[in-house]
Image (tube, rainbow, N blue to C red; front, side, top):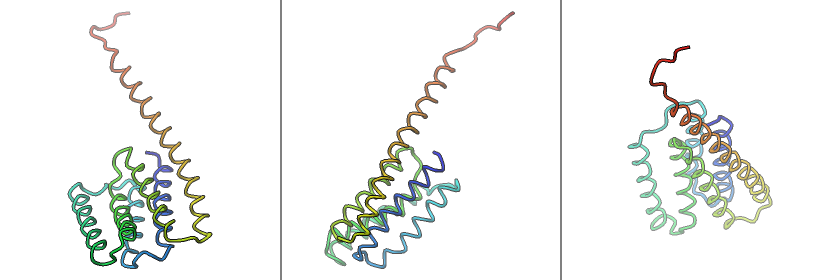
Length: 172
């Protein structure tokens, strides 16, 4: 995955999270998930190893438990709880980008954050961020298509090379 694609993935995640935080509906207890998310993307950009499956799985289960407690007991508002859950899952996902389709999950999670944020605000700044996000989103999806096409080209080339076998020594 090219470094520019990793940076754009982090920017989209940051735009979605900041838009949600900007509404003022997010509980400040969830603010530390933003620097945690940035740290995860920093590690991704530097090529550091991603989180283990066990750690990611336990974190996801913990996030789900926090969501249920938040929705049923703490806030009682499912929409705010979904916003909180998206911040948690963005932080977790930043340590779990291993497959080529993982950034697409980040993009659609950020889109979910914008949809939730649109329910909470009518500020003009939100419109500017939404415009920036949609432009970046389209650019990154096109970039993802080109990356996938390049990966398929490499598969075709490597498959055609494997088909040519020399069984006997070639004599000139």
